[in-house]
Image (cartoon, rainbow, N blue to C red; front, top):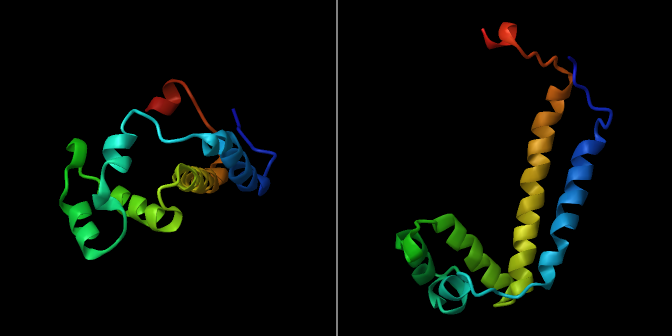
Amino acid sequence: MTRTSGMGPLRPLLVVLVTPAAFLPTLQNQFVNWDDYVNFLDNPHYRGLAWTHLRWMWTTFHSGHYIPLTWMTLGLDCLLWGMSPVGCHMTILLRHAGPGDGFDVRESGRGDRTFQSGPAHQA
């Protein structure tokens, strides 16, 4: 069976537009009482990118996790948006759109290949 895509170069554009549209309602949300208080609201250590912040980000196991790049992204969010949940949600929305587009671009070249199933393919 041959699987082809009739969308061609429009696929990445479609992914870039549809992915953020699916997440747009998150911009209306506030911080939630799940882990946002522990991680963001009651935690001053990540709010910036000064050496004291970076040292904390790269040495902490806050809430049991070692996630220095995530903390750095959150520190940049805090510099850009302050403590606004809209800004944090906007950054997450944009991060979801970017990888989706990258995946689609990598996979778009595979649509012209023949996909086989059954015993012959499993060999």
